[in-house]
Length: 105
Image 1 (cartoon, rainbow, N blue to C red):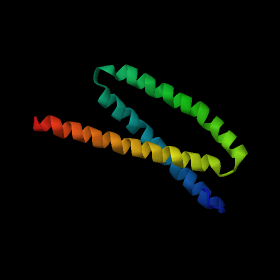
Image 2 (cartoon, rainbow, N blue to C red):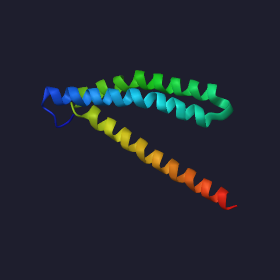
Image 3 (cartoon, helix red, strand yellow):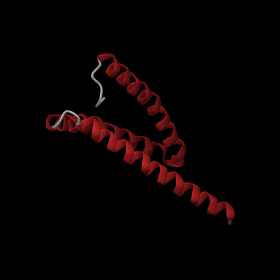
Image 4 (cartoon, helix red, strand yellow):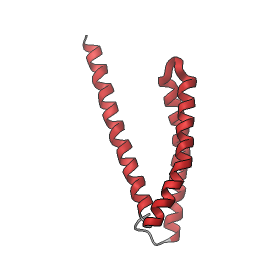
């Protein structure tokens, strides 16, 4: 989005983003409820609460950043995605380590 100047490129990327997001959301809900065990209601409620907060504060923050500089919302979004990626990788590595230790005992 930062480097585009073509309407159709922006339209395609936006369509791709929303398509992937709509596929990812039910998958995330399924993963959370599968891992919640007996606390499925609590986890589903917390997931909905955090998603609602994101839907409120995300556009608000993006508008503020857009007023500062036109490219800042995109750069901030990239930073959030990279941070989430690294946290997920560390979480998976930790989970695999705990599983391998438990299997060796």
